[in-house]
Length: 159
Image (cartoon, rainbow, N blue to C red):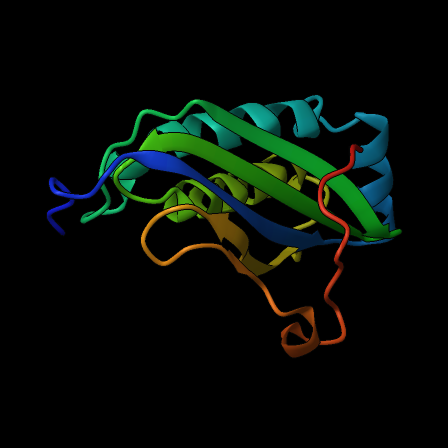
């Protein structure tokens, strides 16, 4: 574990995404909240927030951080691709990139779990950091030109 004891506490944010691709019938049931297990987007939002809070316990060398905010939002990129965008915020001595990434990953896994009765071939893809602010290295934002044709610069949104 990296020693961050001498680093100043600063405001730090991170935003990440995961994309979940599925068949049209599965997407329709997800949108309409008619899945056998219930409303997957509500469950995924809560799971993502809880996962961010547990990052220090899940990632072996990650620090346990006091998070001041975690947000999980959903947006359909097309009829069968759900984009999950997460944002984590803390004032601390190390960044919250892992918290945002873990939140996006677990939210995507929760969507899979809630939808798997309808479809086993759901694909979780494009889990990545979108931006981070604060700390010694300063601000960083994903270069959408280098990110590929499937990049979507619009963050957040709702289902």
